Length: 96
Image (cartoon, rainbow, N blue to C red):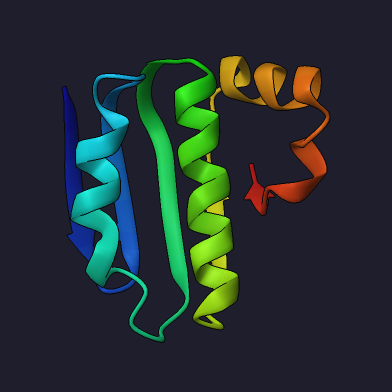
């Protein structure tokens, strides 16, 4: 289960990002890309797998298409390790 908290261009996610939860989070995020810079905090992510990484990359793609700035904060090391293993860590806009 994922909990999403929104406040003025800032999104905080809590829970697990996996193949069960990412589709719901992606559906919820449809209206996040409305033109203002977007900051997504991942400090509350307790577990993630490649599905979580795919979600972050999809958000990057949507942000680029809509010409919205996006940045991820407090990305869990587990997720960064997966990104490095796939060679896509440089594609993520990460700010620790």
